[in-house]
Image (cartoon, rainbow, N blue to C red):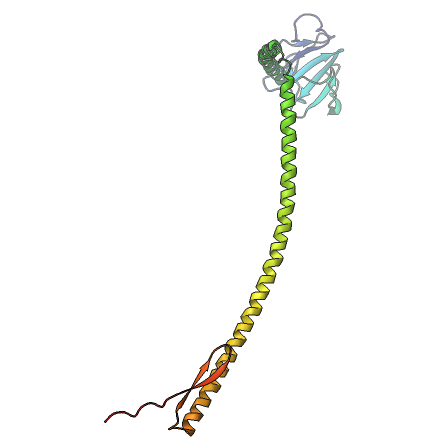
Length: 249
């Protein structure tokens, strides 16, 4: 409430600018703000004040508010000192409302109204969808033959699965036997290879001995019928053959 002229100002009167009407106290003194943000009493600047942004008249006390310090001082007459000397944060009529708060509240209210309108539209759509869902008729009772068919198919699958499991067990057993047979076969092949190698070595040794014997016979009997030695894997025997004819003239 701005200050007013004529008579004592009501308790709660405030001024925040030098253009506002002054506050009139119980003694008829006029309190106002100067262009330099100082307190003016009956048109005279109070040099002890500075940076004053608000004057308030509460219960016949003049209060000054310095926003830069966020402190209040008060006095009851022009000649009284401003108290408390260091100022106080306790507002004479509660916290000073921040004018930006109204802007914030207005913006929040606008957003709330917009959200309410949007929610109302969504709620209407949801209700329409729910109504359409409720209007869908229930499905008919299932044909009992379908249940019987499903049961038969399930039993068939169970039988097939059991057969597959049994076949898998048999295949595992067959694979194990085949592995044992293959291991035995490989072992026998290794044994046969070793025996064959031994036989080959024995034949080679026997052929060497036969060659030495033939050479010895030829050296001892150069004019005798030649002996032919036949060697096979079963036995060794000697046969005679005529000496070669002398070459012609």
